[in-house]
Image: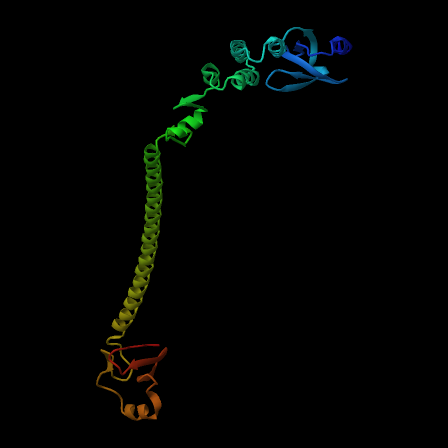
Length: 278
């Protein structure tokens, strides 16, 4: 099959040709083979060229292509045949030969720059006594291009203002959301700090309750020498010589009297604001 394809390509005349190239996948490519190699062909399809490996080609059928017919018709037209070139341009456009169509219309304008049919076919517009491209015509009428459309400057300014307002609104909403999240974070932090303070207050209260219970438990405890602890003071009934023992250093550095007794010593505070026993 490959030999058949190569042979078919080799037998084609050297002049510009029109061919139908059938591919192995069932596709069809119409154009002109402008280059042939041992392993590939290059086909001009009018708007460009495509290279095909011969392994992809099933068969080639010589035949007239749109590009070949365009050239053949163009060769028969006189340079100043405006009607013929305009007709050829419209025919080329129907065959999707855009570049060839534009060439035909420009050929008319090269002979007659004011030909309205050729200008209109190229999409030109007339502004005053001049023909211009569509873009030039828009600008000549004071229009501006914005966001892919042509409009007046005032319309563009309105759109820009609306866009800027939308951007500003998005920015304000983003800042508001950020402030809200920051406030929530601060509230959570304050709540956690309040819980810590409450926990410390409970601990302090429990400690104070234990101290108070100890103080109450010492009220009226007999000292073993006829005296009682009452409100942090030693009641009457102290044994003789107690004062002298205090003078000898029985009073501690905190103003407490160390009274010996069973099970250890009892420290009786001489300060009504504190009471410690051990």
